[in-house]
Image (cartoon, rainbow, N blue to C red; front, side, top):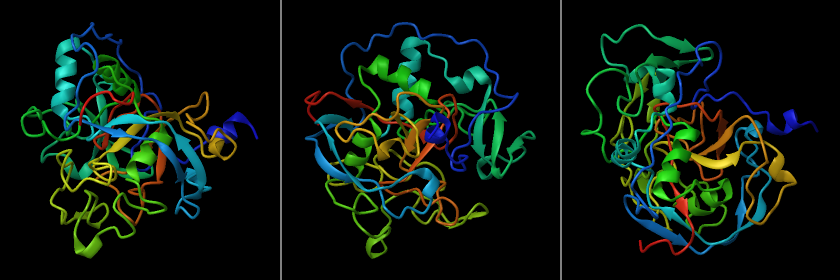
Length: 329
């Protein structure tokens, strides 16, 4: 098997990738040293996870090319994970403290779901094969739908979006944290349950109760927002899982530390796996508010996707991890 075979992935439909002549960034403005110092306590606090051995993956995932299987026993050491995804307010503190410029700002554009564009928005360019994604100039973490009112006041407790993998790493360096590995993420998302597709169990909407923020209705033309949110929701909306973690599925895709491969894990380490040593895309986990069973049934604990490290979109964020015993919850 060639290295290309090991790292090849299906084209991302849930979060498009930057490619082609439009993907030419402006100069990088490296962040000035910030003043956070030590390990910053995240919104919602830390959750200390003891680690252990669990059954990772899914034997019969709906998208074989994603590489969810086979189910295998994996062991992770103890670690701390933020109870929630990083909020817009937290990212604003980082950007204000360091002067950091995100990849979306450097490129001058990011991907926005077409249904969220405001009336009268300038013409945008679609993504071949996924026309619901639009290239919007001026879209970034401050302006999730493009030029217009600043989003910080209205969405300060929503997850920050339009952040690339590189942006997430820069935030981690400032906050004294890191991104979780894919194995840590799945161990945490399962909430102590064995072999269940959702962080709370076997049913997506147990007893008719909504437990996550996903697309409700028919995609991409009609979203009933029956779960209460047509777009992103606050990072601590909906009940937490058994580990006290919020929105591990739905709401926004979350970057992990690993390079993406559909098959490396089949022969890779089973103790503290960290993915292949190199690749073209980084792992994303958890699904988002745009996932719908008709085309993207990836709002499950074992679901995975890869995207290029400089890509950003209105449904991609991250949460941070740290060494165990970092802080009290």
